[in-house]
Image (cartoon, rainbow, N blue to C red; front, top):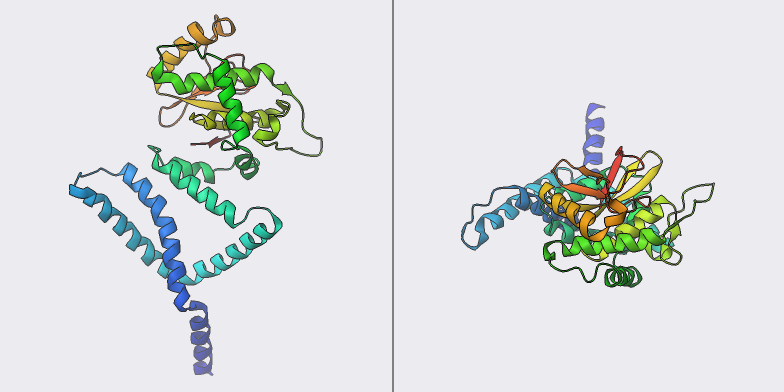
Length: 310
């Protein structure tokens, strides 16, 4: 009787291990997909030894690749089962027109691309993991690559502050302020239906420049991102609003001068700028729809969540 039980246990164990030839292929592909963003994070945060031909970075990537491969092998059975379920979910999403294989590819490509240019690439992954209301809907609605959104942003840049000279170091920020002026001077607040949130895409909001706070935030973030700015959305109690990355405190002084003496003299006269400083001492300026100038007063200064769009 004991031997019979032992035989059954061994038999089940062998079946669960799923040692098929395609096992190795799946594990290796998954390893590559994990190793690339992991290497980018390590590359940006670890000291460079400046070895010839970037040999230190090459060895770092190989070390990461081998380490993750060994870890995935140990968790082989669980990973294979999870991947099967994941593929079925993506297959359903592709067929139904929701989040599917194409969406995964675009998100991964965008993540790796933005991580490679970001001094703190781990922040991009963290921002994707942190809770934020209607997060996936909002990310998809920020259509910064939509030609209609890009063209609107370019129009705003050509319409506002075009003749300002001598501030090439802050050209992108000035152009983002031009977008802010165009949107906020024309925005009309319209509430969502009573039975729930309505998340309008950026291109949809451009039709009438109307909507509630999340619609405004989506449009502002999309237009700022479309011309090279770095926006983020702030979630506070009952409200969402956009902010723009200014830089460090020295940059804040320069931007303060521009706003009060060149760009929004009347609107900001005798008033202060409102901003947040994050854990990396980066300055984020308020661009809420209630603000008459960049850095206008907060409706609510409390931060419950932040969604950064690098």
